[in-house]
Amino acid sequence: MNATRDLHILGIETSCDETGAAVVARTAGGAGAILSNLVRSQLKEHAAFGGVVPEIAARAHGEVLDGMIAAALADAGLDLDTIDAIAVTAGPGLIGGLLVGVVTAKALGLARAIPVLPVNHLEGHALTVGLTEGVPPPYLLLLVSGGHSQLLAVHDVGRYERLGTTLDDALGEAFDKTAKLLGLGFPGGPEVERWAQGGDPKRFALPRPMVGRAEPHFSFSGLKTALRQEAVKLGTLAERDVHDLCASFEQAIVESVADRVRTAMAIFRRKVAPEAPLRLVAAGGVAANRKLRAVLGAEAGKAGFSLHVPPVALCGDNAAMIAWAGAERLARGLEMPADFEARARWPLDAAAPKAIGAGVKA
Ligand code: KG4
Ligand code: ZN
Figure (cartoon, rainbow, N blue to C red):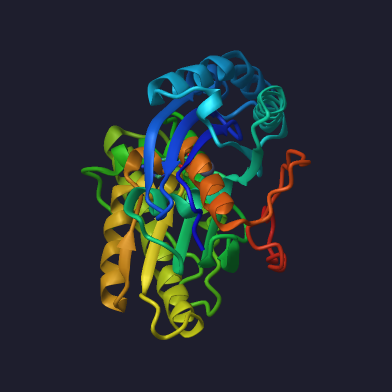
């Protein structure tokens, strides 16, 4: 079902360490367009701490958000009177940051009589390919970010079935912790990727976690520990060692993820109607990794799936994906309560059982 008119949605994103404000259009026919998309990273504020400090994040969002909203509207050539709704990330994420976005959205909505739509940040990542490529559900989704690693059957907008999740660290978290251990910068994913170039991926025999398991779950903490042991054995690390450790780590990761995705593709093929096209979508910050994108492309090809990944700039956190998810829900008349709270935890598939493992997050 589609809306009968074009929609213009203002999106707001403050769930972690990027402040985002964007305006997205959705035609009555369902085509999306980004009219503006501003992202301000808080990297500098958190750099000294080697990770995101929640209190600093919330304050930094608060300092810039109103100016960014004004700039996003101006860039789009619109104002609040021509906006149909405000879509705001209501979770999951760091509660202080979420509150900054939610309170700002509610205040604007109340003052100007504009509907405010609570959006699940993960749904933003999950639906981005609809905005960038016009790819609609159903599809199999690999969602890999700093806080989540999941394989989901996206049956429709708003209908998610979790097939697999991580038993310990999220994939981005594994990259970040490994980078920290090796004395590289934050966020660790792009740093590890850069150092892996020119390194020997076979020098260190690291485990390929979960390979061959029937359920497409992930686990990365054993791999992270194995890498630490190799680094400790070496003592002082030469540049060559860091290149080789990063290359070996990245290789182990992509082989493990490829196996998990293969398993999930087989499950997805059985679950979706036989006439549905077979599509694999990758999203979230880690989907920016070039080696992972290449390996996923090869695996998808072998299984008869097409691969769809957002452009690198839209893999990380941004408000365009939040605006788009809001637009997709609004166009379908899906429930979006006006009276809502920010939520630190908000799984896409609320019915999925908790996976057994240490440090499970979703
Ligand atoms: O989706 P995202 O921007 O924020 C969350 O919602 O978590 O994902 C951030 C995560 C970080 O852990 C970062 O290290 C990782 O994505 N990441 C990467 C790459 N770029 C970002 N991991 C591996 N390779 C990359 N090129
Ligand atoms: Zn994210």
